[in-house]
Image 1 (cartoon, rainbow, N blue to C red):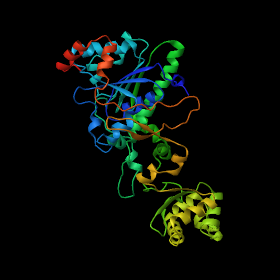
Image 2 (image 1 turned 180 degrees about the vertical axis):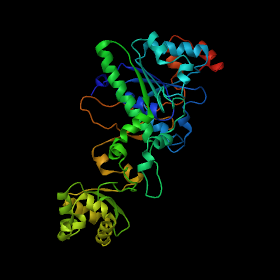
Image 3 (image 1 turned 45 degrees about the vertical axis):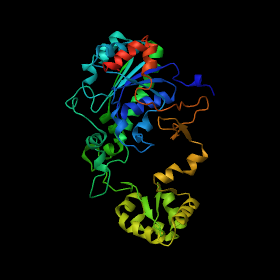
Length: 396
C-alpha cells in the first residue's frame, strides 16, 4: 500500500505541546500521515521527556505519544522565534496547543489573532477547564481532572477512592481533540474556512462519566465504589480460583444466569433461588452469591474455570499484567506489533487500533530534542550561518 493513500498526507500540523493530551492527539494525526512539527523549548523540550527512563533510557510517556514527529526547538519569546512560527503557520493546516492557561494568547497565538491572519487555519486549544468560566485559569493535571469529573467517586473500593492506572483524562481530551480536528478538516474542505476548537479535559472526561451521571439522575443514589466488580450488575467481576490466579467474568441477562448455574456452578436449582431471581436481587445478595461462586472455584485452577466458562459461553477474561499483555496471543496472531526507531534504538510499538485495508499507518521514528531544527529552518530559507547565530543566542 502507498503512503500517498494515508488520509492526512499533505496536512501540516504545528503543535505547542507537552505532557500527554496534545501529544497524544497529534500522534494520531501523524499516524494518518500528517506532518507534525513539534515545537519544544531549547535545551529542555517537552517535560514529558524527563518523566522516567524506562525505554532504553527514554521516557515511557514520550515514546508512547511522539513517534512520527519532527522536533523543532524554538524560543517563542524571541522576536526571531515569533517570526519563525508565523512562517510555519502560513503554510500549516492545524495548530494544536496545550500550554498553561493564557500562555498562547500571551505569545500572540490566540485563536482570534491567528484566524484573522490565517483564515484557513484550524486552531485547537486543549486546556483543563476551557477558555472561559470560573475555572479558566486553574492549572489542571490528569489526576486533578479525574477528581473534578467525579471519576474518583465511583472508582475504588468501598473504603478508598482509587485513580485510574493510566492518564484517562489526558487520553479522553486527546481523542476528542483528534476527532474534532478531523471534523474541522472535513468542514474546511466544504467551505474553505478554518475553525477554533476549545477542548477541555473536564468536558471530555465528564462525557465518559455519563453512565454514572444518569444513574444518579435528579438526586438518585450514585453507583457505589465496588473495586474491580461492576457497580450494578452481578456476578460481574474478579473471582479467585484454587491456584491463586484470578478470573474475570460477567453475566448480562437471565439466560446467562441460568446457564452459569447449570454449566459453571453445576447447580441448576440455584437458578430458581428467589435471592438470585433477577439482577437486582443478585446485586442485593452479592456477598452470599460471591461466596457460593468462590467455594466452587476453590477446587479448580484458573484455566479450568475459564474452560468451563467458555463451554457455557459466559464472557470471561484473564486478569493480565504488563508481561502478559506484551505477550498477548491475540495481539500476536493479528500482527498488531511493529517497531519504531528512537534515539536509543528500535522499540516495539502497537499499531494504531483499526486496521484499514487501503493504507498503512505511519510508524516513523521518535525524535531527539531539536533533531529537525536545522532542516525545518533550512526549508524556511535560513542558511547554516543564520541558524548558528540563532542557536548562539538561544532562539532555537
